[in-house]
Image (cartoon, rainbow, N blue to C red):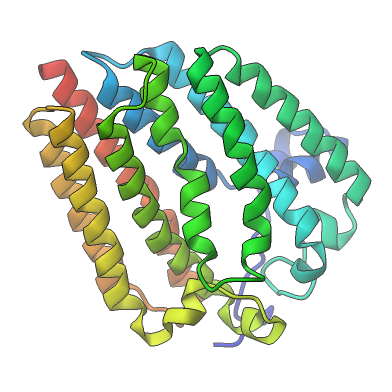
Length: 306
């Protein structure tokens, strides 16, 4: 399916809370941060919440969960801003992204750069509320954030770099609670990377025609018609590593009940995906928020019942 305005919708909603409630001057910047599309924030915060809850003895610390939630919102926006600065000439040539604030002219590059600096400052203000090891780990993730936007130019597997970047919170959540990096968090991190490779391959199928024309690389183009069996591989690997994380953390049965629900949902994604239907790819990608909630619920239930 060709990525044209008729077949691929813009990724900016026609109506959102930004249009109804935000002051006019702030609207392009909020769109630049994807504040009207929360799925990225959910996908960023869930590994933090999973890990912090897995490390907890009973209820996870609400203050810690709130800090990770605010931090994910800010840093996801910063990542999107940086990505759009780097990709401004590419985005203007892809139907789904042509109306984003920078290629459309709603936000200038200097304005976006200043906004990025503001978001990073706010993110730092959140990060310094945590313990020293978590602060150091959080700061080190900026190297991955800076590198990721360029990966689609050099490798067909930018999704792996996204997985390394987006799931850093699986380490941070554990260190924020315990003060050290534990084996369960490493298994959780590895599983989350495979999960991300799967869902972002689905996401990349939305733009594959334009990406091919522009010389942009992705796992969607690399795998092509082999995407479905590879999704089963990625997702099965994620489930196995999540199970290993639970075993290493000595967590009780509700976690595995939740993990079974995650496995069923991921199998549904892989089995029912239509890689040539951009709208279906978008639906399947966004459905990964349910993966986050199901596993989080399983972890919390297991810790509370214990």
